[in-house]
Image 1 (tube, rainbow, N blue to C red):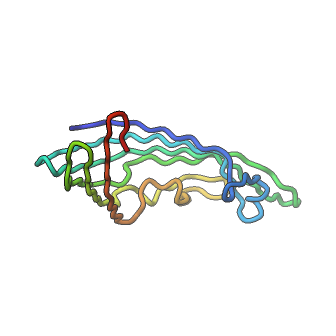
Image 2 (cartoon, rainbow, N blue to C red):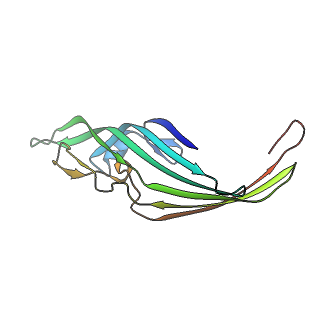
Image 3 (tube, helix red, strand yellow):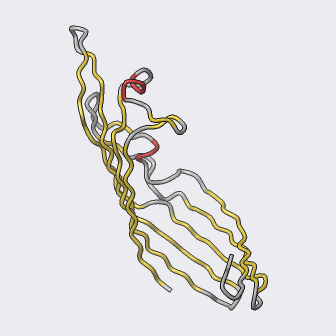
Length: 166
């Protein structure tokens, strides 16, 4: 099976825990406050089942991120100036390889084990221009890969009844 999926995410505002925080609170620690961020992800997936019990999967994505920011800059006369700017990054994300193995499946219940490996092929050195410096390395949220090999393990236990499943 092959699949192509699209996902869009839009974020706006800033929080500390569950509380909204203002740009001025952020400026107490850093010069730049994020305003909004959009992410578009295009995912190509391939699944193959070499047997009735085993399915292997491969997924590669292409990611585009855009972030709007507001910088508080100090002028020579001691006054402050706010300047809006944006940064963006786009490229391949990390490659994911997964497998799912069915331990049992009867008419009412089933149990599958799954595991995967994320290969760090996504870019972690994305750069863009900002008001204070050209060609600066973007923060982690704007990078497209994790930079690490990541292992995932899990299990799915499913039950079905006449009108209900869980």
